[in-house]
Image 1 (cartoon, rainbow, N blue to C red):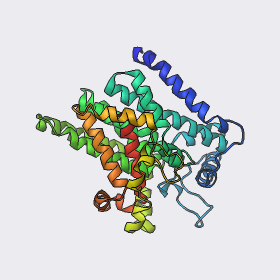
Image 2: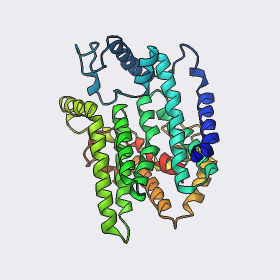
Image 3: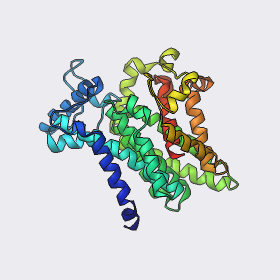
Length: 358
C-alpha cells in the first residue's frame, strides 16, 4: 500500500494526460479517421457484439469468405479490453474509444513502473513514461487505429518488468507466471507483430543475463523461468494460437514472404536524425523521442558502466540496424516467424522501448 500511495500522483497524472490528449474521441459518435479503425476494428467489434447478443463467443464471422473462423485471423482480438467494453456497453464505438484511451494510459503506466524499478526515482520514471506515450512511432503508426498493436505495445514494459523480476528476485515463479500471462494477452489481443518483437527482446535479455560468474546457477534459473513463461503463455493463448497456426498453413503466409516484402520501407540512415530525434516535416514512419528526450538518452548512455545501460544501448543499436535493412535484416529473415513478417521499420519499437528506459 505504501508503494501504491507513493505512485498515486504519477498514475493519476498519466491517466489525466491520456484523457486530455484523446479527449476528442470521448464525444458520442466520435471515431478516428483511419481505415484500420473505421473498417477493420469496427468489423471485428460488430461481430463480437452480435455474437454476445446471441450468448456466443465471436469465434467466426458469416460476413466474408462465406463464413470464416474469425479467431484464426492473427490480427483480430479474442479477449481484451475492447471485448470487455463491448460486453458491458453493447456499443462498438464506445468500446473502441475507451480501449484506445485505456491502452494509451497502460503504455505509460507500464513504462513508469519499469523505469522506477531500475532507477528508483519516480520523477525520472515519469519522464520515461511520457516518452513512451508521446513519441513518433506512437503517432505515425501505433495509435492511428491499430488498437491491437497499441495493446501489444502497452504490455511490453510489463512483460519485461516481470521477466526482470523473475530473473533477479526470490519470487521468480510468481513473476514468471505473470510474464506468461501478459505474453498470452498479447496473442489474445491480436498483437502478433508486437509478440514477435517482445519475444525477441526477452530472448536477448535471457542471453545477456547469462553473462555472469555464476553461470551455472543463473542458467538453471533462466531455463526454469523460461519454461514457466512458455507453458503459461501457450496454455492461456491456445484457444487463439492453434487456429491461427492452422489458418496460416492455408493462407498466403504458408510460405515465407519475399525478401522485398519483408523489408517493406527500411529507414534511411541519412534520415536517422529525423527518425529518432524529431520528425518535424518528416512524412515517413518515425520513432522520434524529441530533442530533450534524445539529450537525456545520450546522458543515460554515458553511464555505460552499469550492465543494464549496456543492454538497452545494445537493443537500440540492434533496432536501428534491423530497421534500416542492414546485415541484421538479412539474419532476421532466416529466423522462423520473422520470415513471415513485413515492414522491418517496425523494429523501431525496440528503439522506442529501450530509448524510453535510458
